[in-house]
Length: 208
Image 1 (tube, rainbow, N blue to C red):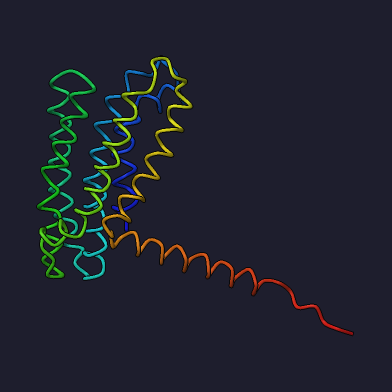
Image 2: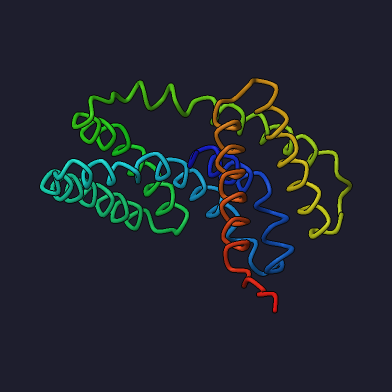
C-alpha cells in the first residue's frame, strides 16, 4: 500500500518537476529541477526500505536494527562525501542516490531473515505498483511533449497531475492490481469508521 501511493507520486514528480518548480517557485529556481528528479528516485528506494524497521521492532531485534543502521549510515555518509569531492550539488545528489541503491538489497535481505521474507518476495509484491507507475509517468511525459511552448506552468502542472492520477488508476484497474483493491477497502473502512464516530458523538435528545 505504501508503494502504491508513493511510487506514482515519486515518478510523477520526476516528470512534472519543471512545471512544478515554475508554477510554485518561479524561474529563479529552475536549478533545483534536476535535484528534485534525482531525489525522487531516492524516494522510491526509501519507501521500500523504511518499513524494515518495523520488522526489527516487532521481532525484538533492535541489536540487528542498530548495526544495520550503522552500516547503512556509513555507506550514505561516504556517498555524500564522494559527491562533495566532485564539486557540485548535482553530483552529491547522484552519489546519494547510488548510496541508497547500494544499501537497498542488503537492508531488505537482513531484516527479511527475521520473518523468512526474501528480496524476491518483496520485488514480486511491489513490481506491479512500479510498472503501473512507470506507465503513468510515460503517459504524462508524452502529453508534456505536445503541450504548446509557453503554456502556463500552473495549468500545465494541473493538467499533468490530473492526467497522471487518472491514468494510474486506470492502468491499475486494467491490470487488476491487488493494491488498488486493498487501497479501496482500507479507504472505505476508514470512512465507515469516521461516520460511526460522528454518529456516536451526536448527543441524544431526551423527550420530556
